[in-house]
Image 1 (cartoon, rainbow, N blue to C red):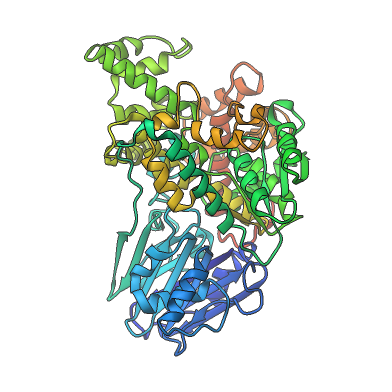
Image 2 (image 1 turned 180 degrees about the vertical axis):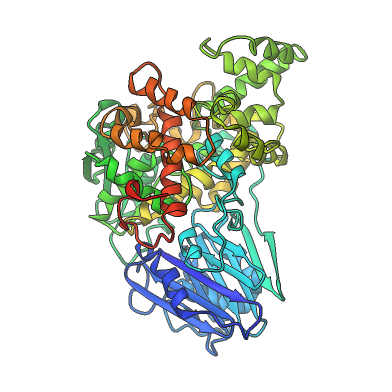
Length: 639
């Protein structure tokens, strides 16, 4: 795993500053502490920081072809590189390393941009074609690895993290009110937008080409749910799934450094570890983390799985210095990010890094196999809509007059919405829903986001799915939005913060394509979520594990806000700097804080989001350049 960065100037006479290029890679040293490399040519600069995983001796980057006209920097892993290397050698290409990076070099020579379609893995790739003066950027199909870019009049700047781009003085730092509105609605800022007006995320499964003074972007792969699977084929699907999982895990065990797994005792991580145990000659190294509060500790279930499978089990109880950790998290995410499960993700990554350099995770199980409560709610809501027909809208409008404290009133209110809008709003529960925004936003900020629809990316994903099945459509939405922009962002940043490579076998793209063909009734069967995954897991671990209800990877944020974080939260929300930004109605901010602090109400999620937003402002807007995560206490900085 690595960090990449670079700049391409359309005018070859406009030189790339090597000091700026080095600063861009220095900003992501945590992503690659083992080595660094740079290439500077006429109007082009490529930089790389390396975390050595495969071919420890000769795999440094940038890596070029024989005459140096193709240069590649890349972050990630190409799991099928051995088979591709054999194919390319048969076509006459000569390899001088054993690294997967060289497959990209020769693959581009042989197949051009179509080479990307042949790669099975997680990646963010930059290919410089000197003969054509052409820069190609590509991101993996799911969005496991990040890639950001800033199109400028003179060229394009890119990197694995936004902080690299900000080292280039030509990249503007103007922030976007619409992005803040989306963050408060969703916990994250959906692609392709970022918090900065002029910086973008390259969406998953897309290629960007910069040449001849312009930028073009195209999709090279898509996951399509068609809704034509048949439930009577359950035995066939089950065996196909068994084989696909075994292959996905086996491919991700390729490593020249110590390798292990995250293990929570839930369905997803347990099934990954079970298949690892079947493919590993030695006991699988597993790591789990919990908190002193029993409601946030799954270690007993993880231990049951580990002991049953003969794994080496390494539990840890986190005792976080949370007031010191939050500013560091802000620095690693680069933009406001409100998912508090980043905290346990950081600690389990930190614990794993003490033992291994690579860890497999179970990410993707919920989003592709119907593991969330909202999937069940969506299915039942659609049944109500179909039974009530036109009466559903009336019922929703009537529910609008009822207070939110009434059980089930949110579900009833959504009957008045269109289907796509209804599912989009399920992602915003306990966040800043429209009524909460009306109380929070200042008049000026509300005017600046008038007409902005933060749910449009989710609604568009719903509409783009050809399946008539509501659960298929819900899964398609999650796959295109929540999975890459929240879950995978969180795992990438927190694992890379401690220089750990995380691999996600449940997101192997042939496995995803199989999942999309399987009917939702074999994912969500009755009230059982992830039905087929559970059936396979029952073959390998105690039934009590395979039938466990979803727990969720959460943290005691409510207690932290009232306890060790209270002094920081009080300062951040009331010292005048947040109010001085003119975004929010300060009496409403103070009201939420007071009621939560006094135990009258539970505003943990909304307060967490406000704190993370304000800490972001202080680090990246007030604090200037953000090269060093330990650059000093941001609470003491002047506006």
